[in-house]
Amino acid sequence: MSERDPSTQLAATPVPKQRSISRERMALLFTVMLVTAAGNTAMQSVMPSIGTALDIDDVWISLAYSWSALLWVICAPLWAERSDRRGRKAMMAVGLIGFITSMALCGLALWLGLAGLLTGTAALIAFAIARSLYGGFGSAAPPAVQAYVASRTPRAERTQALSLIASSFGLGTVIGPALAPLMVLPFVGLTGPFIIFALIGLVALTALRLRLPNDEPQFPARGQTYDAPYAGGSTSSHTDEDDEDEEAVEPHKLRWFEPRLRPWVTVGLIGGHAQAMVLGITGFLVLDRLGLRATPADGTGPVGLVLMCGAIATLLAQWGIIPRFDLGPRAATLSGIAIAGAGVAYLGVAENLHAIALAYAIASLGFGLFRPGTTAGTSLAVTRAEQGQASGIVASVAGASFIYAPALGVWLYGHSDWLGFGLIVALCLAVFAYGWSALQSDSTLTRDRR
Image (cartoon, rainbow, N blue to C red):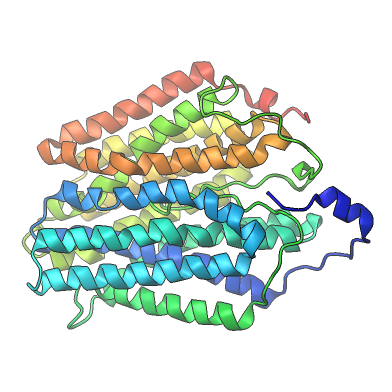
């Protein structure tokens, strides 16, 4: 990825002792990730109400995200490679500009529709076009942030620093739904979160430009591509500091379904589709079960509350349960998908806000275990030299789940509650049955090997 051989360069010049990133710079990088995650989840919490107000069928609201999700899968690895040549700060700025522009134009398109200046269909098409700017350009920021940290943090501190950056994505998924109802303001109405987060993004971009020094990469530190921020949290992984053997040569290009990866990619893809369907259905479910279709503006608070409960449950799984019980990849994957299936079944029969929030939290807790399990399993199934390729496959698999699955789930739910939730539970059961027989044991996966 780099134009110069890093081993030659290191041999020719003495390597200065690496300093930690200052707290100010770390806070700035944390903010970049936090703002984008919070803005996107705030948008998700108001979109069901906006779609209802525009009299647009639910499935078309879900499909409006598909093109952006596809662009994210394609573009994130390309931006990660470009950051090795052009610098991390430049790619962070590209990502923030993409986020700001997309949020502002999405808000404008929907406001014109709500104001009656555009038809509902025209407003949604304009929204989908504006949203694609985030999939295409907003995907530049997350890998650049992680690469910046990885290339400037001493090995002894790198794991902690990368975990902190990853946690900003999860924290943003809690803050976004919590703030969204407070941003529904006079004149801008339901599009308030779009406009306000675009302004917050502008402040973050200004701070980035002024406070973060220009960087010129001296060696490649690959930023691993985060999932498109639809899953309620980041599932990106980073390799252990001892895995960073820069002299290692990748023996061949990894394929999605080669024998070592096939079980993990299969469960990740099927389980990812189940999670994407739940995310697509939940907002509309809240409006239906609480009788808010006639007053969609009143739905932003309940939808935001449910999404926030799910995000907190996801963080509980990833920050509390996995480290506390030292779960291995297989244990986390199988226990997680079982819990998720139980939560989805409960969500299918939940009738009031408390029950819906609890059911969604249980499902999110399960997926919060499942996602890191499949990510770690994929990483441990390959050699150290193949970690960069493995992380790219993880990101692509996760993003692929959100291209059409949310719309499919909403379409089935629109025909019958049991069709939508029945398929999701069936997918969870299929993952558990296949994973039980196909996934390697944790003791085998975690055995030290090079």
